[in-house]
Image (cartoon, rainbow, N blue to C red; front, side):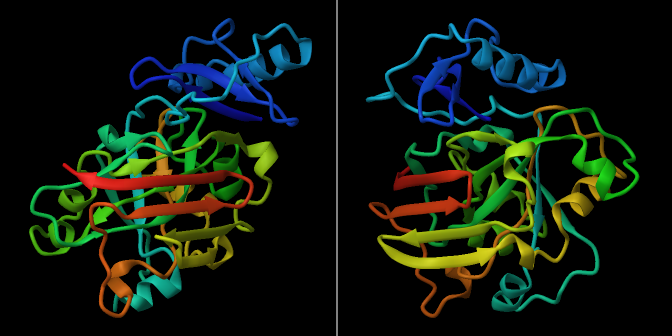
Amino acid sequence: MKLLRVGPPGEERPAVRTGDGRLLDLSSVARDIDGAFLASGGVDRARAAVETGGLLELDPHGLRIGAPVTRPGKIVCVGLNYRDHAAETGAAIPPRPVVFMKDPGTVVGPYDEVLIPRGSVKTDWEVELAVVIGRRARYLDGPEAARAVIAGYAISHDVSEREFQLEYSSQWDLGKSCETFNPMGPWLVTADEVGDPQNLGLRLSVNGVKRQDGRTADMIFPVGHIVSYLSQYMVLEPGDVINTGTPAGVALGLPGTPFLRPGDTVELSVDGLGSQRQSFGRA
């Protein structure tokens, strides 16, 4: 299933996109798509409601799509998780996942405007596979146990300000947590529909020029390992989001470092998860 949230910012309603492309209102069976929904069997309730029929069909024309999960409790990110990306930034292949946190308030819809921070000269793009946790997880015993707690997957745009990230602090958070720096969606695709998360293509273009074209098969640490690993050090709660890293092709590693400027447009997609498009403006 493809779960999403539609409507103006702060007024989104839960919905589901059917296999034949219809948009159905889930308000009768769910208040929102959040941790409580995922933890209480909300996905199964939504699936049953679709199969039973009777859900109000929505007209998608002119309807804003918000982030597929309401503000998560936390966003955990894994850096340098593709060999080619580590190489382009001059970093060694990490022996363990490089983990950092991102402000959950950065999450916006997949087509919302992204704001380049005041004083920024190095705003960068990163297409990523996002993992959404569906069950409380602690001390998971390996990748198989990890798969059982994953509700589904979404596209995540881990926008980054490299000067803030790498030059202003020994931590990465300053360059990752700026306003609007994590577009998500357009929908949360349930794990059963995605299948193997290590067999997905990721693509990103800037102003029509292809910049990233990778595959999740090239991850240094695959999804199951990441989720299990993180659960040894923190409790993962329903609705939490894990950004799993980006392939090569970011501005930081390209000749001339063509960082984003106001007026630029970024388009990104992941196989089976849809696509995003953002215009960049000034904060």
